[in-house]
Length: 491
Image (tube, rainbow, N blue to C red; front, side):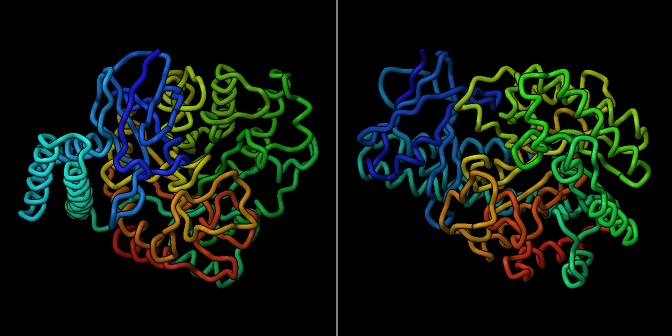
């Protein structure tokens, strides 16, 4: 068994519930199943192998809030590491490596950014030669970390601005899709008008539970009207996921198939056929299956999940040979792997299906950031950018589905077992997040579309306070920010 230990100074710096979120991953970014022990300022992580690893942990950075930080690649050793120093070392290394990579691509670096990077390196050296764990060393390491996080933010913003400027020299308006999930009911006139000002695309959810309310009995009214509204308003149209194995998506009557894989495949195939035959020629992008990598429902094995996903893709493609066909992946960093054994991490799952020649034309990444559990830990712009680039290695178009909270209190209409991880979320913070992260996604040539995963907080929804309209159906500042981004960059 492998074991790594970290000293946290001062001992009360992180609460136990945050320490429990720490995990170890390899250089390939895949987390190991990790057992965390937290006691008297020492964080111990155990796993089944003894290999070099990178620690990931949410960390409160003054002035920046909670961010998931990483160490460098560390070897196992008998003496503990000092966590503030190693997090500072990891962040400085990440920023310098990313800066070097983007410079080779032609990025221009302003003097202020260069000075921040140099200052972070100077502070790291000063913290490293001091007495490990001493108050002075910890203070210098914290100063180094704040400086490196600020440099990372400046670096990512500069990258976004320069790449968008380059893309606009090639085309005044980018072809990227920007939209939101329309939800389970029709938009009223006021919401519809604001939607059309903000977006050039839409997702019509094809929720199995809502459409096939009884076995073989279909209810198409809401879906028909949503599809027609999108076509009337010339919105690019994404539909799905068609098959998604969670409590909100599965019809009650399908629970009788638990443990009966063949019947489950048969029913899923029939549903996919019914939907695609009805709407083929009207849909630009089908999402055949969703969240299958993280599904823990109906006792499906990993092999069965992959086969079922493949069958959904094949059925979609067989009935609509013109539209794009995608599958979606929940929590693409794979944080959920630190608590379960898994033979197919998200990227491997995707790669296996792409290599199978099923007609899969792209991937969707679902990032519900700042929620836990069932969400993605908070990540800064550089980490976020690197993860998108990591998935881009598969060389297929990406859709990115986003949610971040606008409040941190209890949400009575939220359905998923998730709460905002930090207390600092406000409507203004949600808008500020959109203003930085969405343009960065538009700068990525591999990103074909960006979609907000839930539009309204006034109807039952997945994540607390993650909509663009609040409980009173008023538009949040984030929606106005998205409208501004669309007007500046998109068709």
